[in-house]
Image 1 (cartoon, rainbow, N blue to C red):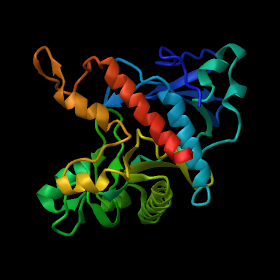
Image 2 (cartoon, helix red, strand yellow):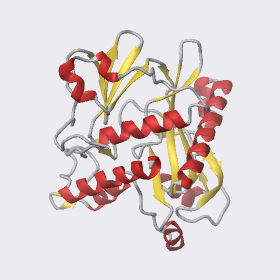
Image 3 (tube, one colour):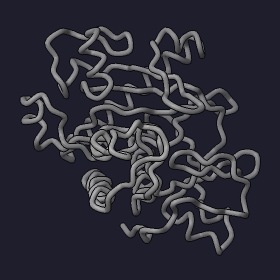
Image 4 (cartoon, rainbow, N blue to C red):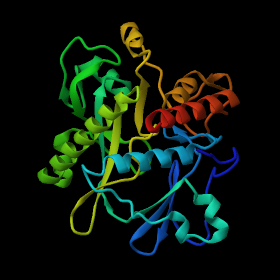
Length: 305
């Protein structure tokens, strides 16, 4: 696929539509009262801080990967796509800003729950398991190691934060938030989506260690999959090759997500001291930018062929 020039779309600047919100990665614009134009920028966030340098082509790759998964998983749950071309709601002069990197979606009532599903122990899940032999209140068997495959995927939701880190919560807390019927539907749907996606990814030589889904409600109360889905920004992708060696060594497998940038930031120095994970972020070297862009591209190409 063709990607933008390196300096393109660090931030979109549509003037024909009302800007609703500028998130860490996406810019959302109102299209009438019932639709939203979601434009994926090339911005990258890590530790909830937006990096000063964009990752060339990242917004297009994220959008195309999300569209691929929405189409592949449409039999499990409806999604928020309208099927209309994003280019149809902007001026001719603005088409270049949305081409290949935007989705025109239905406006839904968002549910403030991050539906996280984990098939492997990694990241914060591994840290929590070491301390309590559980993850988000889900008890796990002893003897598991870093990057180990879990006996079965587990649902470990988080409460969406308006700023800063989302908060890991128990399933019981989601019941208190949205009621037992809807909480159960979100959990079961998220696990079904993960299992279907993980099974397909394995046929392409990729492991999806964990991921998060977001849902909203249509006016008639139907649960709808929304936002992005199964991108390297919201999921932990590992290549099958190298996984067994990393597992045996107790180390993190190589990844096709922004873990590469996180690992670099963990070692970064600001004024001679380790970065404290608050803005501003350290300046990303060109080789880190290029390697990150290459990892996103490879994940997309392996998945879609």
